[in-house]
Image 1: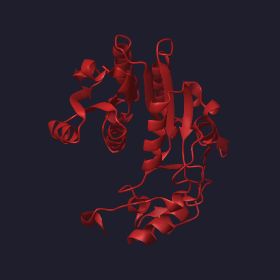
Image 2: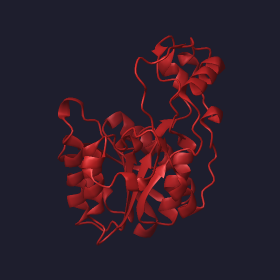
Image 3: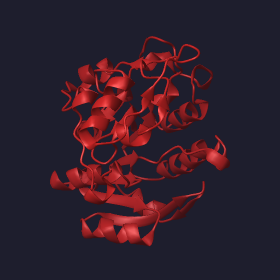
Length: 280
């Protein structure tokens, strides 16, 4: 029965725990991966998994993945040598296929990298078109998904920097020189991301929402605590040669829309868990 079926394009670091929670809540979950090895892992967990690569044309079983009520698009907008147009081209392929499917609700995982550094609090209304964005191609991808609004409920989730578990801030700056220590962070714990996505699956709502922990300590505070907690070499904090721009991303629209209470409102209190073989 499609009413309790969710398909996830991209069952990676975030997509897999979303799938596992949906299974726990009684949904049928279809999911995609780009390797045979990952397909086997997903199937062992009870996910109806299918190979799919978007290059940008779909190679794999996209039509079966779209036999669902809800579609979660969770693929990283990596440009790199493919160029900034590559991700919108991937999304266009999905959107075209959705038009010929029973999908009723699309959730697109976007990013707060869409916002330029404006040295103030920013909200969803600050970026509504590519020229306003620090990542114009990402806005183009959002708009392609929004073109389905005549037939689907469209939810755009602009997620902050995803942290938690083995994504430990101190790991990425250990022993380095940091000149942006005074900049506030816009982080999101993975557990909150999972709960928020699943809230929208259960009760679909249209709109664009920032998904960011509501507290914004400085990078220096986060890095110092993270390095101390896990034994990483502390970075050297120096004054920047020129002022470093920043943004503080508001999640008030999200909190009000779904009456959400964050498990981890303060990035200084995020839960991390480093596998033994990765410990310093």
